[in-house]
Amino acid sequence: MIELLDKLDDQVLRDWYATKDVQHGWTRPVLAHQITNRLHEREAAAPSNFVGALARTDSELAQEITKDPYALEFLAVDGNASERELEQRMVDRILDTMRELGPGLAFVGRQVHFDVDGDDFFVDLLFFHVEQLRYVVIELKVTKFDPHDAGQLGFYVALVDDRLRLRDKHQPTIGILLVADKNDTVVRYALAGSAQPMAVSRYQLAPEAQQALPDEEGDHSRIRGRARPRHRVDDTTRSARAEQAFRPAGMGMNCRRIISAARAHGGQSPDRHME
Image (cartoon, rainbow, N blue to C red; front, side):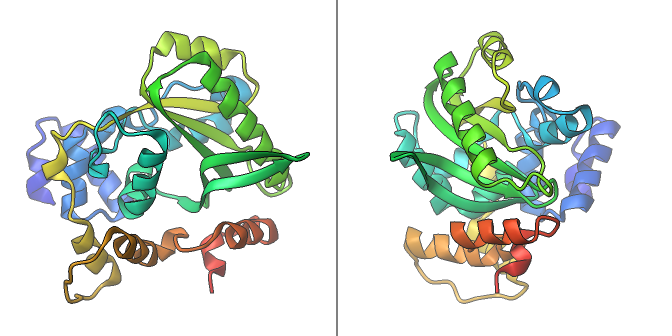
């Protein structure tokens, strides 16, 4: 770890990454990945309307959840992937996805269904932040940001906030829109017209930093704390192992159980009720 930090020329940056390493318990490959992808520039950097839509202290906490851009090179897809393909790869590589989204998030579900007076709606990805006690809606767009996208995300944020949030226990629901490209000025105008707390971030799929990514199967063994025989496994098996390895962050719970846990124990982490 010290060797990696010493490669940074700036003492302030060395201290920043050292503090993050202590906070999150990163392995050496993960630390290398974060340095290579310049986490210090991306963290809490997404344009949002949190300041106007949330109380000041809460807006600062919500902003900390965001990054811009999100480094999704590990998905191993090109810019021609569809939204559904991108979403599927994020679920298939859920351990890497959770690491990039940041600490504190528990996975609730994919394509979470809501019936609104007979009309069906589906949230791309739904998470619960176990430290801030709030739902986080993530929507994916494989195109450049369009102001209409903010309206769709705002609808889902309002829906989750109304249907799932316990107002006496949970903080307001927020939404994060991941897009292939964006004009930050257009984003800020679009978000200014919404009362729902939202942020817009770009995702990057460029392969340049691929070699810096930690080996997923190796990370599983470190998290489990013991070695396991290596076998060739398909993506479905790999995803299941990733979910099992990430149980402390709430992985492996289905949507109904984690929502029930959040409703019954608003002040506790949903992952404490997995058994």
